Each structure stands twice: as structure tokens, then as C-alpha cells.
Image 1: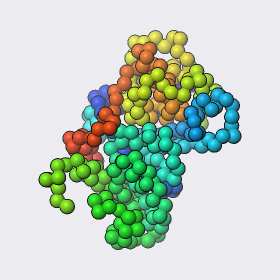
Image 2 (image 1 turned 180 degrees about the vertical axis):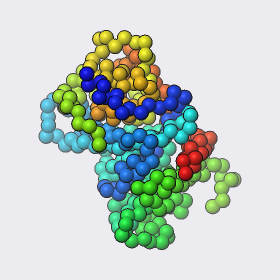
Image 3 (image 1 turned 90 degrees about the horizontal axis):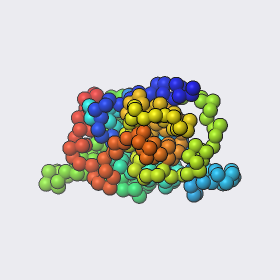
Image 4 (image 1 turned 60 degrees about the horizontal axis):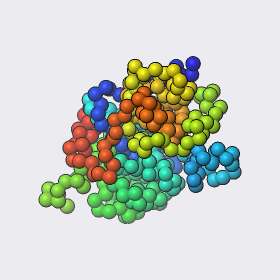
Length: 203
Length: 118
């Protein structure tokens, strides 16, 4: 009886899709992750939740211990079918918390990450960049331009964020599909350049 | 945006999974694609597994989408899907291998797909 509700609104993949790839969209609280994923996604973004505890959440629930440090972590994600055979999933991940299991799950198999940043709160991007570096996940930074937020020269933002010279830095409007797509393209181009033989690279 | 589901929270996650926190196989990624076998009997399945089957019979979805649509934690969804793979109800298509760098060709396909949307 509830199954009709469950499958209602599900948008299925084409039968021909063989490969699914994953990119993370990360950043601090209220930086625009959900907006960004929503702008690009072909489906209404979905949310999954996971309860995190020190040990296994489900086992702890069994004990009925409610006062342990449990936190619900939500991930919003969207989907973009890129060809008959290829689909891209974008996961918006909270950056301010360190939940190892969640991050392991998210970064496993991910191609890379797009770090959304806000020029009014650049320092708040450091924790999430540190987590990505810990997990060895390559990333690009996209400054999500908010109305009224100060605009800085690229060199200034680079310095403030202490970016490596090769890390791409772009500006985007997370509400705009085209602008958001450009930011993702910058990331994937960077990922591709990293793979290219050094002889083809011009620094 | 997502409709409230009255049955949510009626049973604790461990009830759904018979107390198990981990699936019988450790092969599920968030973007592992799952497909249901249309000719498998649903009789005898738990209500949650039946919901998974009824959702997946419509076509291919990722593990994350199954969890999202059924409003179940990802870990619980993996346990249910693991059982359904074991019983032959579900087949999976794994994402690109982990611990391997994505090849240039795959990244090129991603790029082409993104550029086509501009």
C-alpha cells in the first residue's frame, strides 16, 4: 500500500546506462551546495540520511541507548545523464563535520570534488579542503557569488585559500545551470589534465 | 519538498535489517546501479524488501536513489539490497573500480556530456 508512494516520482535511468560516476559538491554551511546540485540535477534532488555514532549506529540503537553522541547527517544529491551509457551523480556533502564512515562512503570511487566558497567566509572553507586532502581527492574551487558579497581578484582569493597553483579557481552562480555547468567542466578538465602524460602538459 | 511518510520511524532501522548493521556483501557504493529481476516472486519478502523490489522493478537506479526514494538510511538500504542480491531478486552494475584512477577516456566522456548541456 505504501509502495505506490515509494515509487511515485522515481525517474529511472535509461536501460543502456552502463557506468555511473560520482562527484562531490562540498563546502561549509549555507554556501549553496543544495542550490548548486538542484541547478544541475535532472531529477528533483534527493536526500539520504545517515545516523552517525562512534560505533555502528544500528547496533547502538539495538541497545536502546539514546543519549550517545548520535548525529544525523544528510546528503543531498542529484543526477545528470551524460550519454546513453554514462550517468553522473553529484553529492552535496557537509564539510564542517568529520564523520569518517560517511566520508569514506562518499569519497570512495569519486572522481573529484568541487569546493564551493563564499568570499565573505573564505576561512570556513579550510576544514573541508583539509578533509579532501586527507582522503586524497582532487578538487577545484568555485566561488559561489552571492549578491552583495565582495568580489576579489583571483590572486587574492587564491592566496586567502592557500591554493596550489594548479588547483582551478572559478566563479559561479549556483542558481544558474549554465554557470554551474562551467564550474563542473573546470573541475573535470583539471582531473583530466592530472591524468595526462607530463609531456602533454604545459605548466 | 519530499512528502512526509507516515510509516517513517514506525520501526527502528535494526528491525528492518534483523539487527544487522552491515550487508552480506561489501560491494555497494552509493552509485552502484541496481536492477530488479521482474520474474522473481515477491512472496515471503519483508515489507521493506518488497518496497525495494517494487521501486526497482520500474527500472535502473543507484543505491543512493533507492535510499532516497524509500527514505531509508543508506546503511539499511545496503543490507536490504545485499539480501535481495543473494536471493536473486536484484542484480547490480558496479561503478568504476575504486582505488584506480579514472581513465582519460572516461573523463573525456564526462566532459563531452557536460559540454553538450551548455
